[in-house]
Image (cartoon, rainbow, N blue to C red):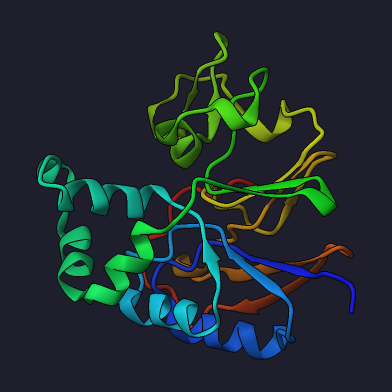
Length: 226
């Protein structure tokens, strides 16, 4: 059968929604499942989400939430953990930590000329040469071309995806949109499940979108991109 890749947006501990989405997706033998990062934090059961990912053999990308937990576990970044982080930290099993430690920054699917990443890329630089801090956190780009989170950015910054010119095509998470966000060269799959929105997936090569609605909001809604 032809190769298929299923990419799933930010789950943020929403284990029941992930289970419902997988029922809708009905993965078949040979499918590659790519989690776009931020499996953990804010939702009700981060450990169960990682357990599900292990059970289905999913590959996972490093999100900013996983990166923060790993840096704290190394002993150097405890001051960066808030109450939500600490609840997740104490809930994770040795198998969960082992899974997180194997997360990649990017996954490139040559047959589709598509890169999967959690946050994104600063335009104008080769995607493969960008740093972990940038690709896990970037949302907007300032006038000097520097990538940053929206909460850190001055007025007038644009989302990086509006400026990205491929190839390759980029599928990403991290920026919560009210629905799947598409440009000519990008697709954003974080649709705010943990905030009461949708959990979204895309199936390649046809780029078919599959979604389930959150059972309820689990975390205070940030300002969503439209």
